[in-house]
Length: 39
Image (cartoon, rainbow, N blue to C red):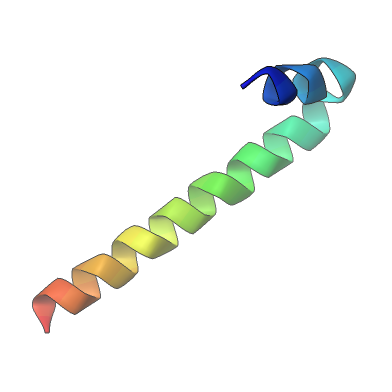
């Protein structure tokens, strides 16, 4: 968590891109899990 805060202070733009990518990965993982459950 400390590293994340430091990177946010250093460059908010980069931190927002990283968090956006992280959210995208979570969404994809949820979609894959739903597909597996349907099968």
